Image (cartoon, rainbow over all chains, first blue to last red; front, top):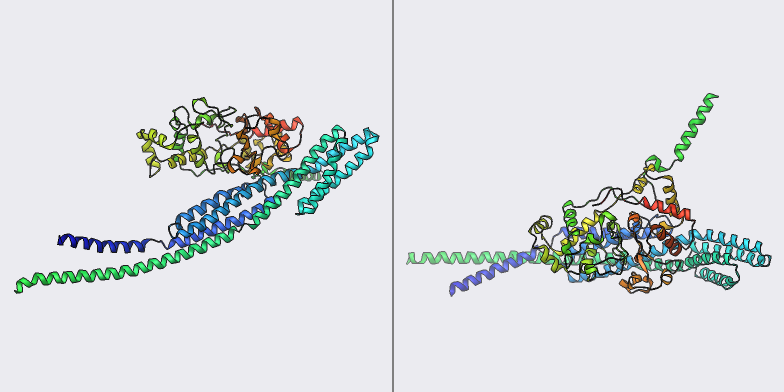
Length: 289
Length: 320
């Protein structure tokens, strides 16, 4: 029984040492630099992403691949960074979750932007041709029917004004201009029933593109505004700060455990020395007697 | 006089050479469509394992279908049917998208519900209307195949696992890139295309098809509403759940009838077209695109040239 108690006591002492030793291993100092580098890369990707949105808006980007690649890359980097820091502090998961949510919101907005921008650019490209076609049909109809000449002449003029407003709208965000454009188009729509069939068909095409530009421009501006308001970079900085604090706390904790393990090991050695000394004395006692 | 004539001829030759397209000079063209990557950095062992899994009918509940049953790689990565057919002859709600070049897609499925090919690979296996199985059943069957289990162990330290099955299939699918004559043209080989095909490409850009079908995949990198400048679904009549597109995933009204823009690579081989398989021919599909996506008309000759260009996107090397 005594031997068993001794064995249990010995095992407990060794387990205590093992626990302290394990706590000193919990963190790799290189982790700090690795995660910091990943978050810096994420910030860089995010900044480039914004640049490519603007390049696409102005037509400098010839395709949307540069807007699509960061969608995967950003989430992958965040996931691998999270894999390295998630065990440090549960509060980091919350911070990571907020950033992920923001990145997903950005992905959705960029997806909407791509869809709207492609339509907008197509209609803006086509609207001068659609206007020319409408004007040509109106002139033909006016020449064929003198009674309609004045009406067709005013349609030609109105089409030009709509074209000017439409092209102006491309260059700036102007709600008033867009409202005026809609009014102008609305007045033309009211007259559509009076147009000869060939003019009406051409007018429908013209109208659908003007309406598309008006609507898509408004939506694109909204999407860009929302994108501008998304503080992804700030959120990355916040996550980095949280990570650094958690890391420093973990390092401090590790150092504390290291000190404790040294003291504990010292005490164990002292105990061992004491026990060995006692054992030696006991073994010598009968001889002396 | 002779010297003057020679100088004139030389000048003419130089100016002709300078005005020639970059393609004639062997330079890579700066176009909205980009060539496929020359080299894929994939683990050949995973590709081979994925290929075996892709053709393995044990992935379906009744061992009747493999991924290749719907995605026939030698036939453009599709089944040629209007709608996919699952186990017990169940006809699905949507057209089978091609698996070729699917690694270039920014999302998977018509409605983009899978973010990755790995995620996508699990979809049909679990869909009761497709393969109707689950990982438990698949693992039970595959684990009886000792050779297969050994192959898995050789590639993945943790052996036969659902995530490893998904990874192997996805890696194989990423290997299915199909370089075409048009890629050679983009890389500077001007003679790779005939004149009418080049004209077709010019028209493809001028009419605005390229606004959505661009990038390395010639599509597959964005969503778009089907029926931008015309109400396709109103004209079509009966609207099905599959017609809802991305709305079925997000429940956001703005996503109604929004689909992933499909890649046009190998489009010559992937009829019938669209998510509803409603266009039987490429000419028909181009016609629908002009009407509902571009909101304009074009002479038949221009459309024919565009179709000629689209056929240059067919992969040159046969896929097995």
